[in-house]
Length: 255
Image (cartoon, rainbow, N blue to C red):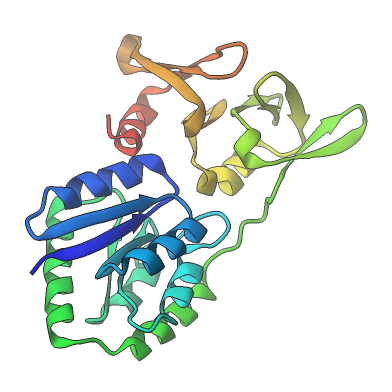
């Protein structure tokens, strides 16, 4: 039995990693990879895969929004949630019609998931259980408090979309938000920005720097086990990755 699948994740490193792992398994055909919910729905309708590997936390349509829509299809695919959530949520997935995989992905766990999918597909599915779980967990999904990043300019408050922020730096208990060619003081602390921007592919590389992973130009090894990253802003800002954060950064970027 060959399983056709579509992978949906707004984080490119996770998307690439899962695609690589699944493509290397016998009897698995990766039909497409999408980085947002709207595109994913269109591709699922077009290709009709056996299973969708679906990230939960995405901007716009999150994983539960996509799942709810998919389950209205005449012949809905199986859904496997990819999540970094704590066990409180994923325990509810433990039924035959649904599964979950935790980030960072484990080849062993993924192999078990594929086998479980094949067994579930072979005996037929009751999607009523799946719909109930998606509805229940969707209500527990935290909503992002920052839709925009608030910064100060000439006594006024400006609202900047997270995707325009290259990095944030700490300054005297507050923070500075850096876009491509400018920087602005921000009333939030770096800890507060990290909490609200984490879902948008931001990573705390140093206690004084929070960077947008999508705007890293290059990375070089530095002294004492540290890394040095160069950003894509107009100043090509260089930021040191603290030694404690090198390993999680390498895992996220599949280095």
